[in-house]
Amino acid sequence: MKKKSWREKLADSKGCPKVCPIDDTKSKRWGTGTFVIPAPMEVDGLMRHVPKRKLTTIDYLRKALATRHGATIGCPLTTGIFAWIAAHASAEAEAAGVKRSTAYWRTLKSNGELNPKYPGGIEGLKERLVSEGHTVIQKGKRYFVEDYEMSLANLEP
Image 1: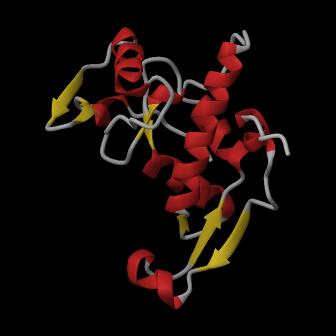
Image 2 (image 1 turned 30 degrees about the horizontal axis):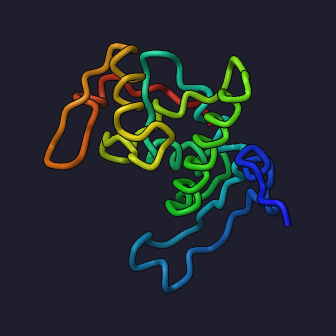
């Protein structure tokens, strides 16, 4: 069986988006209400709307998705996974010569940290972010965009 490409994974919605009640096992961590499991293309779409020199975080993506679907929260696990898939699909498209793909380096982890699992690793992300005017600092073994809050994009749900 042939392995799916990143772009095929991105296009596979698996029946999402769907809004689910937060059950007892998740309520200790997430509180009460509902959570949305987004479609991968939704996450990619939000990431695509981050303009040059602006940033977003996984938390901001989750909030925009929750608002869009009338849910209490966006699922932290699937939103992060789908952002990772979008990043790899973008790198795959870029390698195939596609000119305008998702600028995944502008999507940071929740606290402004660079995601080392994105294509290009820390060095590749640093290079792209610095070229857009951001300052990347190291704290221990982790890397962050300095004052990232000042560059957050307004993501409309």
